[in-house]
Length: 231
Image (cartoon, helix red, strand yellow):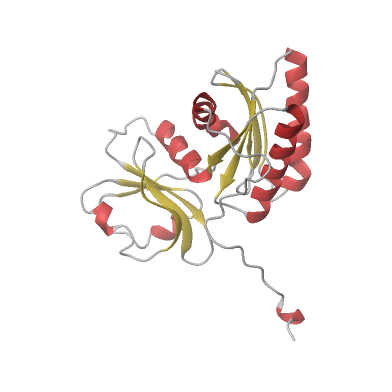
């Protein structure tokens, strides 16, 4: 077990969680919108103050690496890199899709274990970032971008129960009519949901390269130009 600072900035909620031996000891979050650039550094500073107060040593920094908001992911990873480098401790990257899948596992105690988890992050219009995971978090499809239609998951829905979650899953409710399609409402990735994944990575020595790691955008970033600026 270890003391880990978890940082989640992939979506609208900016959150941090200081965990020790698999338990959340201190956490902060802001759900007022994309305020990550303003909120994250003070949140991390408060976590460091808590560490000092309890006389604990930080063993690693874990950060969500996507997919998700381009801006949010860059802010989170940049701060996590700087902190890990300055303290000389490992940097852990955690998939946002797996954070949602793990959160779903703990949310529903009636799962039998044969169901499949389909976290979805909105990518505008009918596109999402998604993957299909079993309960060992093996990816049976993806992760990657996917343009949704009524046949998107027919191969799985034919004989398995699929549980959809995340801010992109609302798009599927009018598409999938199978009795095997289920939805889990109100699941957003949070730093406190990273514990199992960041602890596992720490135990296995699965660390990011502090100098060269980048977010997992899963598709090329495209900038847009306001119409008034187009010649």
